[in-house]
Image 1 (spheres, protein in one colour):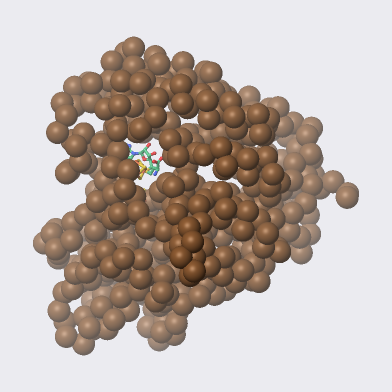
Image 2 (image 1 turned 180 degrees about the horizontal axis):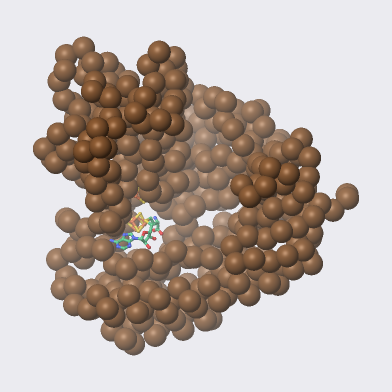
Length: 441
Ligand code: SAH
Ligand code: SF4
Ligand code: F3S
């Protein structure tokens, strides 16, 4: 029996791709293993967004090699954004790798593996063959849990000056609304209740119906909400520049859209936003936030931040902190700027000292954590709609679920409730999780 092992880094789009790769390999009657030493096929789905992420995968490969963990004849397949970035070069960097495939060629992986097994050749295919990958993937089978990702578009054409994604994932391309809806229906028929629509910039989704008409993202939200069984909708990532009034109206009209939105701002300084090529300024960001809060007064907003972008002054950073205080973000992500080869920002002078970058990151994260904890504390004694997604990691006697604003809650309950929505009263608030009890409906 051929066994395969998959490890995934990076964003949710990679997680989605990895699930589709599982479907493909299982369709060959190959079996997944969590023991790398037992694997005949090793698939690594990688991220190149920051240098650290990229280094991780090569370090991992060499440490496996060094510890002699890999099977002698294992076929090592490097996929995801590092593979796409390095292409042929990956073969030289990592002599143990024999297949290099990209985010848009996952549907060709099986035939590449077979060719390697037969001929012993090393193969590279990191091309961007339009959006055909979706046409060649088996339909999503046997999804576990209560929530699923659905990629609605590939690539990105925004070319923010710091970002490698447009180079690793190619130009933005939307799937047809029919294909997206069909996939959601299949997921719902398997018991999935929450759908997370994915793309690097979902707000600019532009699908084409078989009849030739265009479907924009707001329309796709209404179509998704109409599918019986879809009880909660999330989507990521939104670009503030493209968050239209129609999408904001959908928040008002459609109760199944979760009460939280990830809206990466990156910086609060107009000067830096311009250098980043983000296409909006702080005023536009405040405008979008106030419209969203008018449509959904309690909406929870999270964000991504980059500190230490080339040329970022103390004043620029103060502008970011001021924006944070005005918006009062919930749990967010923040990173020290990492120059990516081939991007325009990599040619700018990276003149902020590392110590300064670290201080700024620390200050920013402390501020965000302060707000996130304030929001958590405000949840004490409230009743939350929770999607129960499994058994608690801490105690087998307890269930684990997610609130609308993306917090994990643990509470005693019958495992039969897994996969359903229930009202849970929050009884205890900890730094990263909440505890609660089921409310009798
Ligand atoms: N499409 C999404 C982001 C995808 S990348 C958007 O536009 O918001 C996820 C996050 O990684 C980004 O939001 C950004 O904060 C961070 N990031 C991207 N490139 C980076 C770089 N070169 N250095 C540091 N952080 C980076
Ligand atoms: Fe990168 Fe900008 Fe595209 Fe996001 S929108 S993936 S940050 S280029
Ligand atoms: Fe990383 Fe590629 Fe996603 S670079 S963030 S895995 S699109």
